[in-house]
Image 1 (cartoon, rainbow, N blue to C red):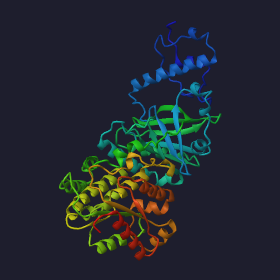
Image 2: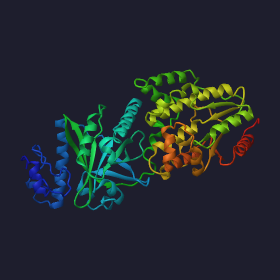
Image 3: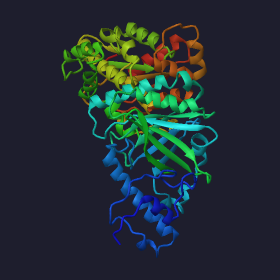
Length: 506
């Protein structure tokens, strides 16, 4: 039959929930006045279907109608349209992975569709949870990724203020399954334990301040009487709010690699000079100092070679005695002492430290290339000691960008731990280490201004451990560990012995 068949009639015929019911089907409580076109369905054709068949028919009708509504109203597809998965960082530094599925009948008999206790604790009642992810296209340009990172940081600052201070903030990553580079979208899960009515209003108001396109959508989580979790997706349009999606929260398997790992070479662990340079080039419209850094980088030859003398890089966390050791070794060996970032850009360090990770790491990466040019010159005249180099840049980037605990770091021998091919390589890298208690004692009373990451090292033991493990996984060259707990004299002799053992000419 080709008679017009309204969605409301279809819902009643299929046994779908009426307005005010809580069975949990998509579109619950929403009865649009539009009718489907002739031929989409017919009451007589459904007469022979059982309850499950009619429910499936209803889902099909709803999917078709949703496509037409988007076309009529000009509503873009949600930024987190399927296939999309999510990685939520839990308080114990584990990650809970879930996806969104709109078809309730598809998951009715699936064991994985049952509520996950870890997710239910953060997404379900009591209280209410909201999600915000900053959209970025899979093939986004460098400039688009930089703008997305700046928006993410601005939202983070806002979510730590005002009415949101009573809420819990968790890292949320939206990603494409299959380890596709460029597919990760960074965001937040905001949990309001009291389910205050002003939290949702404040979030919508915050979205209204976003001038960037595409604008993030607001996800709102809820549970039906059966305990199943759902997410409603809201967008702002014409001064009001519009529901653009509703889907069931379905636990999914954890991928073999952390979802952000494929993005690391494009975002924080740059494989070459040009990749880092492109990021700072995108920053020149809003960071005046970015052009000055680029000018200094462009003065450096693209291909530099080490002179006849040895180059030793000394790495280590703050308060491991690195500054003292590098100066002492330089004096003992009559070697040139260089630092990364170099003095010529060190004056702008505070500016870039306040920027998102992608910008901050591009600044430090380019600093390494400037230092490499200095190493090439100095190593023709004497040995060179470098206070921090590429390993420091990479380890802090990995530990910052990869959410969760140690188990989520890229595995040993992953390409992200490899030295960039176009960066002058040292002959030896030494990593100074001390136990956490000794390091904490040394930090007391130093009174030095800390960067954001240095402060994180003190406050977050998991972050510190991720930095240390990443250091140990660096390759080509790897790091030789030095216990820096003994006296300064003993540490100096240990370092000199390692240099003379592994480097010729001393």
